[in-house]
Image 1 (tube, rainbow, N blue to C red):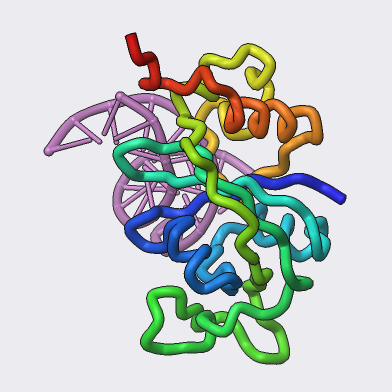
Image 2 (image 1 turned 45 degrees about the horizontal axis):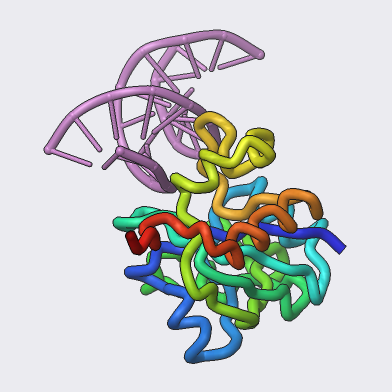
Length: 161
DNA sequence: GCCAACGTTGGC
DNA sequence: GCCAACGTTGGC
């Protein structure tokens, strides 16, 4: 089992959207490295940190789970789709996806600002310079730290006095 | 809107 | 294979 972080723009698909539908094909990954993670390394049941990117408050907002093996992303064959890829054939699809299922929404997001402030996460893939991958591996230790931060009472902005 | 980082494309 | 140009990501 491996641990993961998957990014989504909440304007496009948020943790609330995932909570509503329960399970979603993770369509539209068009980066080879991210695809290879899904194809080669993900297993059903792997835990996923759900991350909101390109928004007012980027951060980890909840937990999901890998719910299927990798299979061809249908959107690569759809001419009308923004994810259409003319180089893909059904015999040799270029892009795959996995289904992701909702697990939990954090009461408070673990913001990127807080992640950056946690010294034990200095080495994590999300915080490496120039990282733009939409799917990133996390170690078990890094995963535990993020979950600890999610349940911590020392949330940013919750100082009452 | 700006900019850094990085991937992809395409000419050669 | 090199590399400049261009596009995309994503934080700020």
